[in-house]
Length: 203
Ligand code: ITT
Image (cartoon, rainbow, N blue to C red; front, side, top):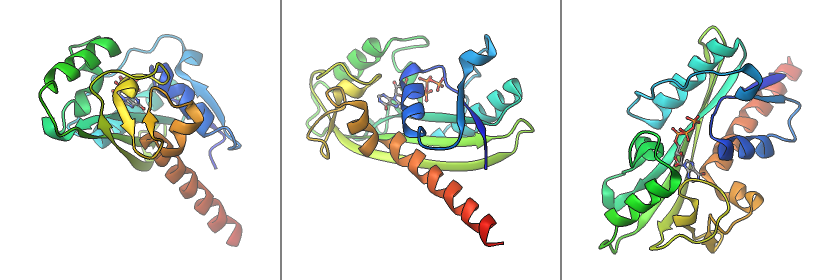
């Protein structure tokens, strides 16, 4: 079982969620802040899974430790899955969440069909570049016409969760983690780790 894991993200919203979602595991979670300044890699993948793998391997090599990386984003059906893998840079490189959200609302102004989903791909890699685990998670919702709430990060205030009956921007982190794409993906990973331990103890 892994004892130490670097949550390899520069996104503080994701980092906080990782820490809470993995708090009951006997794993020490480190953040990239523990390793000084590390440049971000170019996210050249065409899918969330490609980019999660790319980031996990890149940061594992840079830190010399096992890393977990997340590539995630919002897919809006009426926009053929946009912003998708470009979610963080929808309004341009270095765009703020507000700039991305404003552009999305403009592009959806006359759309009645507002189905959307958050997707998350997670990859865990060793410093030698070996991928140990890959999991994913999806969270379905509807795109609001105006932001609601100030919790969470990114597109959360625009995302209406049918399960929670509120926007992700109104949900507490505990509520969000129960239904979110990242919560589902991390729980899959924890289940895989649990199964591996069971197999070992039966040998
Ligand atoms: P790292 O690559 O350092 O992890 P990032 O923010 O650039 O940070 P991504 O490339 O995976 O990460 O982009 C994810 C973007 O998708 C993120 O910036 C948000 O705009 C959006 N997003 C992902 N998960 C989200 C969530 O749970 N709530 C709201 N927006 C989310």
